[in-house]
Amino acid sequence: MTVSPQAYHPAQKILHWVVVLGILAQWSLNEPIVRVIEAMQTGGTPVDGDMTMALVHVSIGSAIFLSVLARLVLRMRHGVPDHALGTPEMQAQIATWMHRALYATLIAMVITGGMTWNGVAPLGDLHFYFNILLFALALAHAAAALFNQFVRKDGTLRRMM
Image (tube, rainbow, N blue to C red; front, side, top):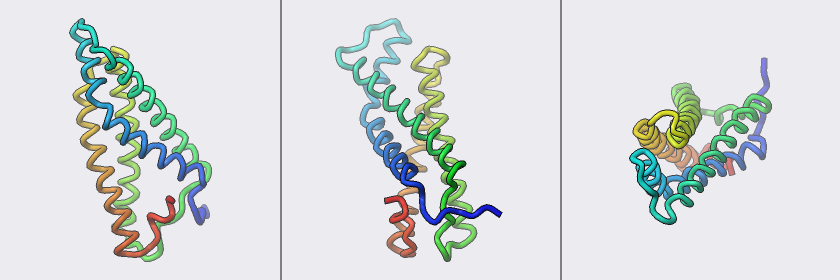
């Protein structure tokens, strides 16, 4: 029997918020990279400043990817705390699958974005659809954390602070 830790490892908390901030930054840097990709695919020249912002987008995406990989390694090494006491089994299962979906979507976004950026395959449309999925998952994840913290009052949000 494996014993779950009582709290998240400090590095897990830090990397969680690095990913959150990275995602927020990526959403604000979307337009320049779209214009650069379109220019690259049509043989055009990117508008001044767009290439710089596209490179920032790629850099942040790489940082998100490394953070997600590090989080997965930390999950394997240190585990994660059990769901809060009193969490209904169905809610616990949904939370588990939500986390898996978030990780998978983040990795899929990096793969599709990287393949598009490097000209391996034009997966920009798929990258965009993963972006919509990520937004929905992140919104549901945040709503669940707030619900658990303020309605159920189980300390879920506080555990990641």
